[in-house]
Length: 322
Image (cartoon, rainbow, N blue to C red; front, side):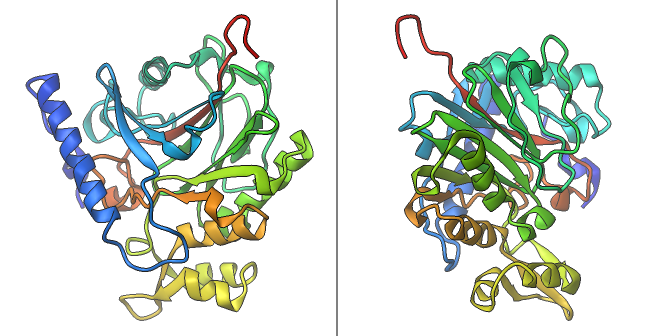
């Protein structure tokens, strides 16, 4: 696929752009509801909302927590151009740092969080999950202060965790008992290393979180039909997952020596094994690769793309309220 095929159309008005985005979202819904069997349930996890001219996805399972503000970005609503248009939230994609910082501020304002309280992850395909507080926030300059980490957790009001994706799996967690949150990035390496289970462990160590009390969302990412891998990747999963689990995770590929890998199933099973009840693990069922005009997809664009972000924040209590 050529890079210019990833360039968004030119719109003559915001209304035209909004109609286009709404059409893309309807396509997401129709495909999500007709996918095949899997070990995880089919449900409506994400909804599209507009804040002015910025579209954002909200997570329905977190609606029960008044102290949580969570959102996921699309390609729209920012000021990036070309194949990075419009809401590129990645500093390593060839975009101007000032443009990326402006995009972060636009999105934060749209979802209702303070961009100075952002904490950005680093995406190195590891399993480090630091507990972050006020001193870790970006401040006036939007940049990464923590390096070599793929996950973040906090119980500090006002802090907003921002983790980056473009096909890899967002893993988002809320502990309603201790008013704590976590957000992790899981590519195939992180999934093979059970990044989700590591996040559950870290929340337990940091906040006393009980796995059975957590609510988890597996966010928009690449589906098994789009994710072809080789035997080396399958071997990595065989070291961490049992035979019955592998039957849910790996399927025969369309080409000799290739396999289709279900990262959603792998993460669902890892979270279930970590002690989160299945009914509290919510799989969005939204494939970034199937919908590359709505979401950035590394595989669909052959690397010519920007970055999406998942944002998860603890709201600051209003005066007189706890």
